[in-house]
Image 1 (cartoon, rainbow, N blue to C red):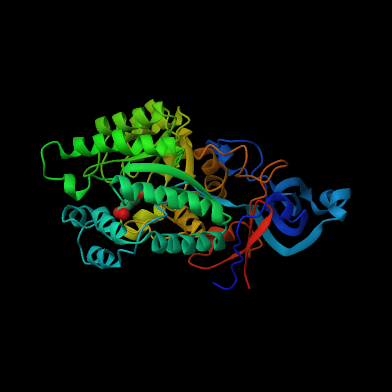
Image 2 (image 1 turned 60 degrees about the horizontal axis):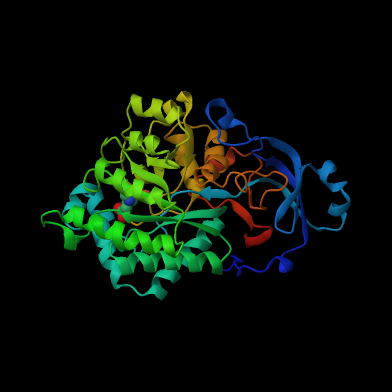
Length: 435
Ligand code: NIG
Ligand code: FE
């Protein structure tokens, strides 16, 4: 990808001292705090003819061109006029399965011909198929694939990516994935936030044996978790709590133990069936519960009263050809904190494109463009407990932003399957620029 200018992270002294960006037809600041619920989700804090001054990786000033240009420090800054494009905070993709070995295009074809996701999984395909492939792959190959994906994330305007392991399902492979995530975090400019997902499904070698699931959970809790904690390989712990994966009781045990070791819980909840995972997430004070296609009215009420973020992943339903998307309108109207993410993974959502997710959120979830943008920036930052540092363009925050080749922010979701991201900036450094 010739236009991608991804570089190694440089020390602070090497960062562009000052960069003055002017000429934004609309600068979406997303100012005003987090989390956003109800009507506050659509408040983008738009500045017309906007400008932003970046100083040593942070935002030093935001406002109209006249306001920002008149500052003394702006006069000495390097200047970039974005020519009437829209400037917004970099997207925060708060749910991905970044590291996996290959696509599962063969299963995609089977699904189109009528096989269900769960049928394929029961026959040893699905996640177990990806596990087989990952165990056979070298660390170098996994890293190269993930690195290429990260370049594509950046080219879509994303500046922070959550990443979970979960295609290894044994101690060595899961630690290998988490170590690769840490290396990638240090070697390329996007921030990677790591989540420990040892409980994706029960691996093949534990299935069909008495207490197989319990024995795998024992391995996870007694061998994987202590290593993850000692080596500080993750901030969060996730469980796929669903039919064919882990039960609520198992999820509670895993997440409670992880919580005692300082990992914050999050959950894959109510995707294939309603299990009560949302109620569990709320009870544990989870950072987020993600998917939510099958939530009921009581789940929505519980989320609305909680700080647990409802992260919606419409890319999955789109890719799987499902008609039932998560009830975004009901969640927003009840007052839940709604975020959007790609769920980049080879089985249900092979996309890195937050703009595509925004298009789906608008057309299928009936979210307005403004709601979708706030869900993909400030609320997603909140889901990763980073709302004080990223997710909005406000003085003192990290200089993470995206510039889109549009005049009106509504055109970001309006165009779909098209590359409209023009520039991406991470910590004050230009990491992507279109030719
Ligand atoms: O978020 N639901 C669990 N995990 C992934 C799918 C994983 C796969 O099929 O490889 C998801 O949809
Ligand atoms: Fe997922």
